[in-house]
Length: 405
Picture 1 (cartoon, rainbow, N blue to C red):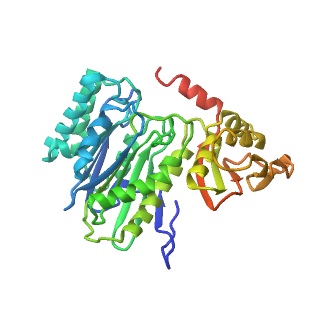
Picture 2 (tube, rainbow, N blue to C red):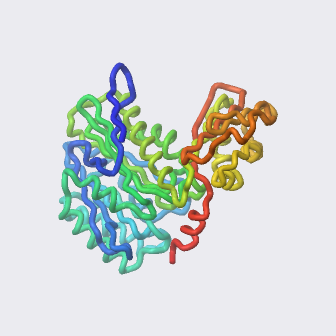
């Protein structure tokens, strides 16, 4: 956990970890997590976050995958008017490619939540995560049972329970919050596999008691996700269910400057994104690929992503092998503006390649720590970007070879 005070323009104070309040850190919210029977393990599998505040502004971003789950299709419609009062989430089944029956299940879920809370179904965002293709009658029965369980368990301190209930292959709950002068931003996330941009297989719920319009929330959320969640690229696989929801209760009565709010929101999103990376399936290294001196930001992102998705590079890091040649080979596949024979590459602080040629001996590079930093200097401009990824391990292959069985 980190706790740094904001003084003299310092970054907002961040709290992160499984023991915090997450989505209930901000005033005006209740949450709950419960076990509805969706998981064979018997662990919690349904969660509910409710906005009880005087305002109900909402914004959301969703997967860019054309194959979208029923909850994504439903929730896009819900947030279209900028108003929502609740988010219901389940793990243990994606409700994707389950036909009209599956969409009806999502609709019924929203109706059940709405009836329990005295709000309209059109004010209920629904999120699901788990195995694609799961969404039969048994799934429906468990989910609807979960609605009753979570509405009965709602609490102003229920954030940790909600965060635990949305886990799938995650090994730990993911929460973070930032408190400013009279207002707070808090959030929870799940995600461990199929981590790739747009957004990275994730469900994220973020709450704030700041008094902001839905348009202001949307502007801040899109700016924050662009430089955080959209730059987590653990395995290059894009999900069908990705959803990031931001709700404002307005309970603080404070309207911050949009720039200050965006900064705080970005801090929360960045921390949650880092927690997602650190819990990636089977990973033994958390790799940060820093691309600097690019001609433009898009080039920096493209170059970083080309390395993050290169299995030869990822396998080398797994073996603690600083094979910088694989970095150059990967970035050479892009259309980014640079001269391959003028590129510098450093790994964990050791410059192993200078101007496209060997530099320091590779035996000076220690890749045994879990955190691995790769610095790629393109030498053509002032722009930079960082992509977060992981190594390719035996455990990742094993875990994903048996996911549905």
